[in-house]
Length: 226
Length: 360
Image (cartoon, rainbow over all chains, first blue to last red):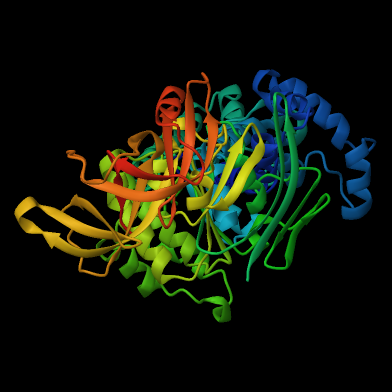
């Protein structure tokens, strides 16, 4: 019987990567999206274009540049190796950074749109009620942008789940470290283990559908429509 | 006494606000002028929502802007009521009301939630969400929310402009009560004289980014040469009167204006109550003949002409200021002036053809 040795590791690792990526993107993407929504700087357009790059760039191109940057001789990789003692490329940390860049527009653009539609008016009202800009962000702008956050989390998460090219370039195929779901499926197909490929694919399909179902259901029930 | 001192120079393409204003903050000060005259920008500068590169704002001895140094909005003791209410849609009415209240120190909470809820009739709305409120209700909540920060100065930016006439009439009594019961000076921006006549104490006339006239409303409105910022149709007088009795068989109430009788449609007011009247200059005719003359006009005030000046555009009319115990302004034609040979110092009768009652 070949059902004995089903390998769940790639699935769990992929969920971990997607979670870590979304978390990182929320922390970095929120201030970036806020700046894009409110700044009147002439740099705004340039930054917007850079953020959108991963939408049009082939993942292998992005992955290739990241591999160079993160390699032991790369600017980021060399520095990382000195501090951490192991290379950044072909590590889980390296994958999180690469995935974050790859999924950047999927998190920043919904957030930016949400902040823009909240606008300046409710913030002004909060400031006149003694709320500091920071206080106003957390007590007014964020709750009003909740739908934007939900969309950002879902898109960022789902996009990371399915990534292949960047993972292959930067992560390689180290079991337990960088062997993600899409790579595992590819491997199984290559070695004609169709049963394994079927199971993993079905799990991913079911899981993705379930997440979207829950999120769209929640979205309808949210009290605030912006 | 709270004073507001503001020296501001704001430039946008095609617009300049240049104001040097110093006034006592007492009761309701109305900034009046046509759209685009800069009154809202002025208010936003006081609030710190606009920060002109150069300016000076002092309120009650506290400096809010000095040159380019600006105190951020959240550190200014103001309340701001926006034209569009701007309630927080994700919070209940109750939480909207307490948003600012919770953010000021306990010792500064001079105005209490119960007071505001009672004053503005918000008791039944507390658990509702802003989206389910009517425009008038929203604006009442917005006013209450601003008041609950116990501001040193309440700024109101055309708070009634988005409401239809009926809703305006619903809110105005609340504003009057607020003015009477809370000791909070108000700076009120409006382009509609109707809505502010019952509130106004001090009037600031603005036009094209400049202040044209400042003073007690009764005095600014009756200026013998009405400022061009004041539409000719609004030049007139505010008369303070008292109710002396009622003539029920005619459906009239009897008023006393410095001892002279006036009649108005029946008002449900006790004898002795104060009633403010607005009399437009164009609704006053002058008669030199004897008082006994037969006329259908009921309201006739005897007085003495104090000044005569040309009025308005066109050159065919003049303004005549008459002292009837209070200043009363009449606009008549030049031809009538010549026919009647009116002179300053002359005794005349002012026939009042129409007047508007303003309840406090």
